Length: 77
Image 1 (cartoon, rainbow, N blue to C red):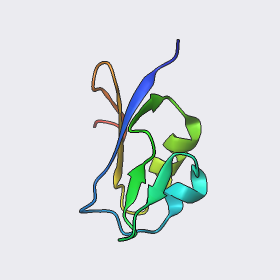
Image 2: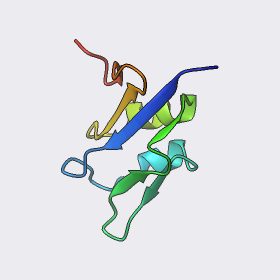
Image 3: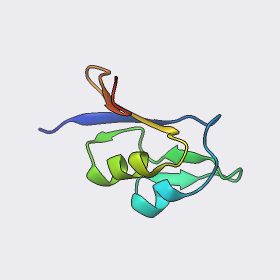
Image 4: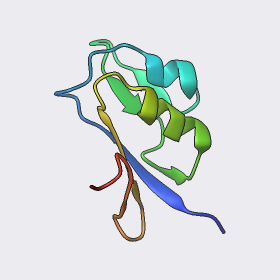
């Protein structure tokens, strides 16, 4: 069984660029305020979701390993 991730979007940072939806249309949705939300906050590791996080112009998307809380993105310094 592969890694499971917890995905969060910091609504105070999200600018509604929709880059996350462009890269992972099954992973994110915009609400009526154009704020991004993960479709399934706890899900199997997914390269498209990681690409979406990396593409966010304001780094509003954080991904951690579900079991340990270890950072996947952004990487810890």
